[in-house]
Image (cartoon, rainbow, N blue to C red; front, side, top):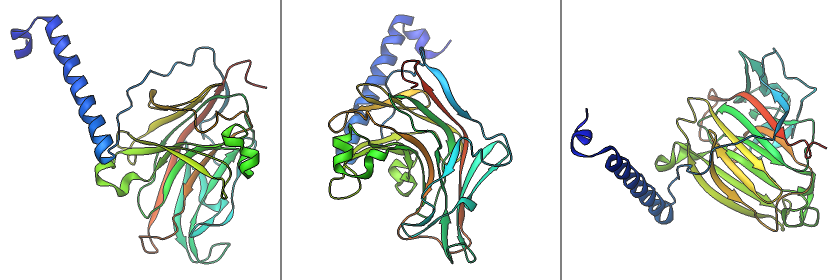
Length: 284
């Protein structure tokens, strides 16, 4: 029997625990407001009732399944290059490697990789990956949706025609206060002068650079719901409404414009699986 159990009745202990949890939550929100600290996901638990699995890749083979994926943005990007040669499948994981290569196909420089689903998806769904994010060098791991509608402001139509939805981006290792967290964002309006962005904040994740965690997005008719390890982190309807266009899923190890490491440094983005669910009325 603990000291609390000796002093208080079970109902009182439960009330004290609830009060303590509420106090911690209030202090955390104060830190978010004043210092932009990361938040703990505290929303609803993921419920996939009514959803059917429409896409799954557990990366169990020896090479990327090209019936499910294609390489994206190969060539110059930011301060380096994206290359299919940086993407491999090993030991049940997708591995995207960032490193400096003297003899790369685009010349000497920093290389990384990016893939996207062959299929485009419409009418919503739930998108999830389980992964260990890369760390260091200014590179960052990301799982996100993008759309042909992001070709320009008119096509995106405030997000209704298409949006970029960052299910997670893991670059917070550069921030000691928010080290164990990821960033969530929505972008609309194309990548020119019409670009409009909403940063939804940073959310805490247990050891994102050393252990597997899951990151998910439920894209409904009315909103985007972001999940970390099956718990809701935040919701968004930015800007004029959720996408009604086509969206495809992307895994990328992004390149910075400037590099903080010297040749010889490398870092990996490991993905255990990607799964996509849709309701029967959505899968058209």
